[in-house]
Image 1 (cartoon, rainbow, N blue to C red):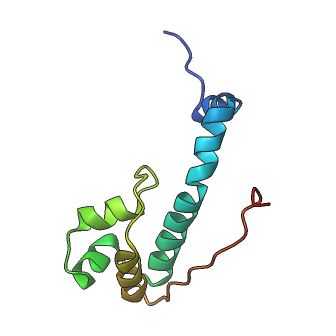
Image 2 (image 1 turned 60 degrees about the vertical axis):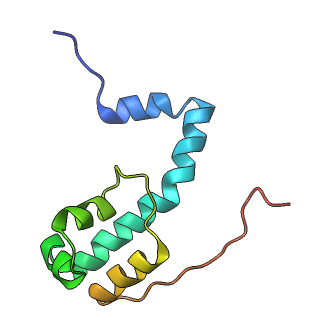
Length: 101
């Protein structure tokens, strides 16, 4: 049986590739948002099932919405409804890109 590298070792090696790193970096805002969503839900002491009930949807939809494995960005109205359901406000900010001249 061969030893497989850990995920962290695989990730570190993969991120040495400039194209992979660029794609990874481009997804960071989505991952950060999903982490915030989960944190807000947990602070509200709500389960995914609770949020699903509040939004009249299925738990699997909330799970998919929060999943870091899902690269799809939810639409703005979904984010607003989710935020309201967990007792938070949604704020959106534009910041200057470091690549902007």
